[in-house]
Length: 211
Image 1 (cartoon, rainbow, N blue to C red):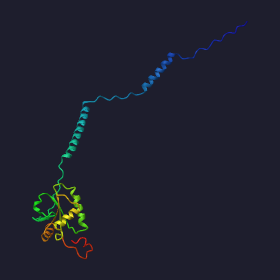
Image 2 (spheres, one colour; image 1 turned 180 degrees about the vertical axis):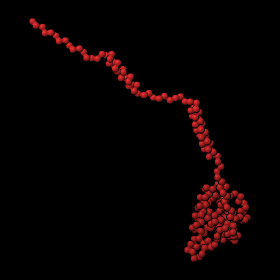
Image 3 (spheres, one colour; image 1 turned 90 degrees about the vertical axis):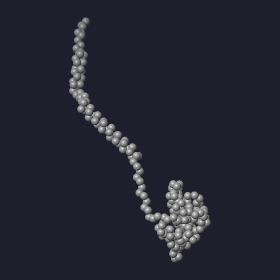
Image 4 (tube, one colour; image 1 turned 60 degrees about the vertical axis):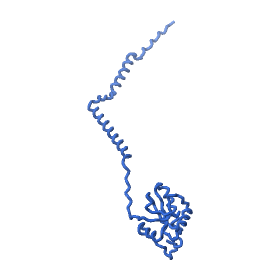
């Protein structure tokens, strides 16, 4: 019986483990050596600390100045209004109120505001009375309102009383006044400096506003 000789197996080609590990370590070292390291900042010098402190001090001073300015805005005095021009002086003059009582202008020691109306006026005067009522809502309580008739021949104290009642006037600080015709017309023209005349009979509005 013939025996076939066995063929020896070829040697293994697997590289040594030690060599592979060595090459891997070398490639990693080369990679780390190729990447540059981040530069390190030098520690602050005394001069740099001084500059930083100076800037911080400057910012604090500016913030303080802004705060002082902001508070000073509320401390500044309010601008004063210029006094109203004086166009004339009123003499002592005696009126009669709608209640029939005498009233001299000198007795009005508190401020007052006046308008001029007459009860036969059917257009302008009711509007003026309405405006005077609205004005009273914004005036201080110390300011009085005077409605002076320009038609004293017709507007007696009783007529003025009815006019005030018809317009719902009940305030004590709102007075309706009349006086002797000629002195009153003179006061209106020369001291209040208002034009006053009867309406032209040819005027179509003369019936509604005869003065």
